[in-house]
Length: 133
Image (cartoon, rainbow, N blue to C red; front, side, top):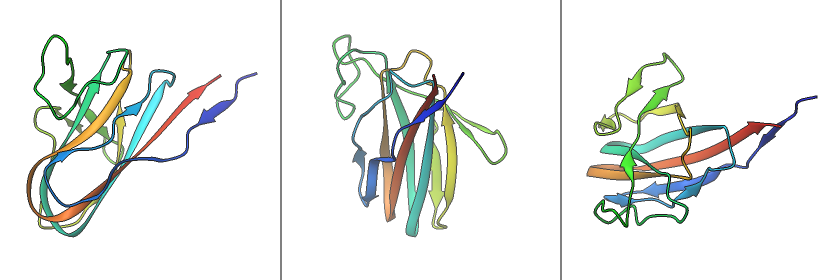
């Protein structure tokens, strides 16, 4: 008999109003990861999603190196199944938005979110991971 195990929501970014990375979330034990993304105050920013297969959390705010291995990852919009390329990210331009995304976490140990361009507003990214066991 199969049951589903969920995590509680974990904040990766919490009303962030500047450029920078969020809190890395461990996802290695889970099969599926969804992101709940919400902005406020006429957000004008870009957010990109990051992933790593490293055993220990990389420094997502530092440059990518052999010893600090991470990359931007694609997400899928759960509204219309549109893919958002990792290097492109989600760009908001003055209109607040509330979206849900699926992250392909096959083999990933860590995910994170990073605001790479910022002019106004704030952004919250919550992570929920789950698996069937």
